[in-house]
Length: 452
Image 1 (tube, rainbow, N blue to C red):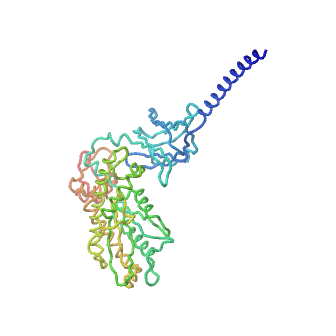
Image 2: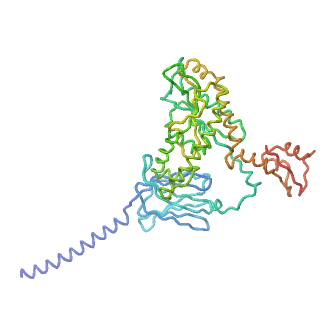
């Protein structure tokens, strides 16, 4: 009897164990299908000339897949075992390749995000590791198909692309950081902000230039934030304005600095060490996915070009500065100032004078002298970029049109005012260049188009 009971009990226990195992297995399977490995916490969108970049902030890395659908054009992003903690409708999409975003759940545990597009794109995606500012990120670049496949433009079409030269004007210090203090309570942060505003106004009046003030009021900006703002503005040139100081009041004169080669080398290493920089180098080379040696060579070449352009602009500016104030050094100086460490933006720092010198402090506080300094800096920048305009700018168009000679053949529906508007010139200038006594034109007639 006891033996029979033991056998029966063992059978019951084995069956109970089997059902317990099945129950545990079901619970584990349920947890596996509902638990999430990553959460999409935020999203940012940036627009470049050839692509839209969508960045998803993740709580941790996630396995993902990206594929396309047509009619209408869409890009689908699948993230394994992930969830969404973000209102996609709140993401700003104006001016991007994305018309809208929506999400859903796949296989009860995966997240699917669908990007509805304005036009077909070529997607590329990659993960970025955490840095001091962001955590894990999923980056999706949407390259416009027309960027790579558009035919070679005729000279006439190319010359119509006329963006301005963007000059970032940075007034040093600010807020709780007054900078150097001079006799009569002259503060560096006030002097350089006043000069920066005058320089901004001067460049704003010049056709083909678009100045951007980095610091617009009395507040402090971190040094790397200043170059970051310049990069976001698409700056062709970064100018940081300062006023020097020395323990001896006799020191005087202005100076112009660019980044030293040693500083450039250390900055290249810093950029290469951060994968986000490798993917986000605006206006430079795309280092993402490149072998370390190749990436180093590419970045070194780009930095060398940037430094050369920085030196050329600085040399022109130093000459101009010497016409309105005494120079402390008659050659371009080199240093490792943080605000000059932009691998992709020609950058220079201008010491407008010694605020520790009583005579120069009084000059720097003078609105008239500030105007002269701002005018000299502006004239030098204008002179340099008129001689060496960046491709695609209005200044490049102006130079090229002088050599190519723009012409327009009259087609049905053309009017003289419409042609003037198309080429951004005046009706009077067209009439004068072509010897027209009235606004009457005829189909097939060829008009010379003035350059400005």
